Length: 402
Image (cartoon, rainbow, N blue to C red; front, side, top):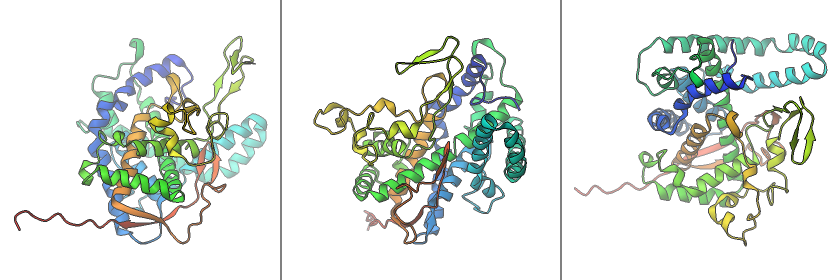
């Protein structure tokens, strides 16, 4: 299969592919995609209402809503996980991190012990490889089917096919193989990371009740009904945005950074000479928990992202190096789905707190992120997060005709 956006090492080819997909991730596209996002979020709300006052491992359901949304956008059809949690796709979704883990192990062993890697992976990787191949075949078949369908539904392919297939600098349009490769990439890169951040944000809020009350008050005070919770209105919720930024800092969905290679002749990085060919990265988790960048780096303090923290010298966070937080990367190879991720995270979190009082289930200790937030394999292998979702009962507005 040809390289997608993440794997394409050729700058010109990467630029060509990115230009083709840029319209599918624009603010205009997101506005058109809002009804689709809201449909899946309301399905999540309906499932949690059915499970109200029961123990719910929310990590499963956040994965389900993320995969259903991305399936609709990248493959032209939802996976149906929120409708049927026993969907044939559920096992693959639950082992998505396992597939990433396999890639990390293969990469590390391939570097240090290539022969051992070949032997071990031939033994250990068969179940995960089979699931990955099954998913890859389904993705290719579904994308091919979608490409042959004439529709104006606001998914990625409507915009890609709408006269925008031409690559950058007059280069060739996307090949079918590149479309398949990028759809597979979006199904991993645009799902597990979003679900991880939302799981982390919910845990951090529940572990810090004052922050939870403040955000809940903001959301419920800003919106009179679920219909008012829109992609356009949500960015104006300052504390909601601050909570998401702080969650990205404390529990970055991708713990390590993207690798870069020093060019011919070497380069100077942070005052140090790096010989050519050297692979370098800035691990997100390490950078965001360094006292060189953030005060009280191990504390969950959303206030550090409010406007006053950057303008008031009396703020304990005035000297924080906020630009160090780059969970989506920087430069021409940063995450193309950044805007979609923020809109999706705001919508899901705001809708949950508007509709439910959320509390820890009794079986849930206080240790998910306190040293027990799961293992980091580039992304996190998360433990269960058991919560109760109690529907909010609001007084009915009297009918003026009565």
